[in-house]
Image (tube, rainbow, N blue to C red):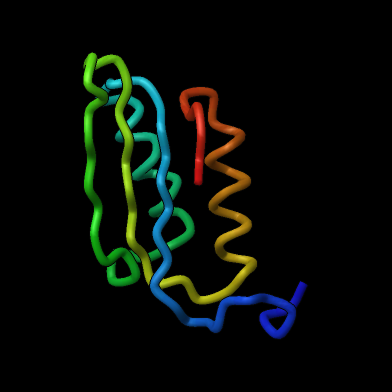
Length: 88
């Protein structure tokens, strides 16, 4: 798929939401995955939130996506991670 086949126009701001256990290891792993695919200057904002019961954590990364391939690579690695329960 090329950028012309995408509904998105690149570069664009794009939120990625990841859910997993409420552990520091989960947050560290998610940040490491994002860092492998997006430089710190492309990461606009990172927010975390604990579930009501405190068992799960959601991490939202707002980043400046440069291509569909970049987003695909991020999602592939996130979904392959055993700690990630869901990536949106």
